[in-house]
Image (cartoon, rainbow, N blue to C red; front, side):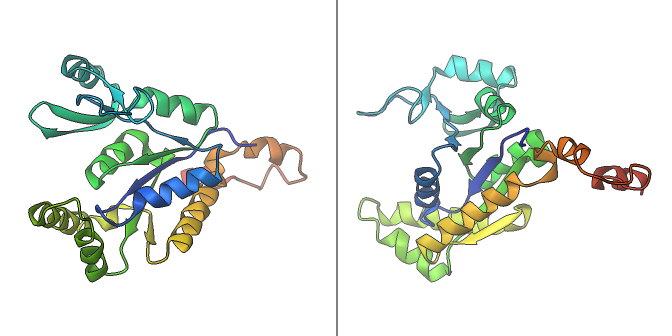
Length: 220
């Protein structure tokens, strides 16, 4: 009965565990796809083009920007860019396939501007500032300066929580996964994602007096 998929846009500060939450959801729902970003950096050992990332040249990336082929993009360093190809996302939604996208709040804002209500924006938050600091400081692979930069970025992200439609507090991983699944299921049931008129046509109702929510809002 569904006519379009759900674009689940997930954001949150580094260290909050959003990647782990997404991985758990994808492991439970093989029907949900993951958006593969493109980047101008070189592949690392073990990485495969089209799996972790789509690796492109700087010239190709600039062409994609000019052609409007990216939902969002950002420059990390002078010649290091990351972006989300629009074509695969549009194709997935048109086929009724749900797809997840993990990006920062700036990317989420760009996706909302281009995709409108087809995108569901979810912010993964820590239970407290102290817990986020503890998680980031527990990363033995990072320097104190790197941790400080991530915490500074987190402050900026917290400022923009209000632009999201949903918030999931990752205090308990299992609970956070269950909540993200519930958001996905709720979005699947939105009227504009279903062939509700086909169902309505098979049901008895007074066609002269019953209006859809969309029609009613148009009249107001």
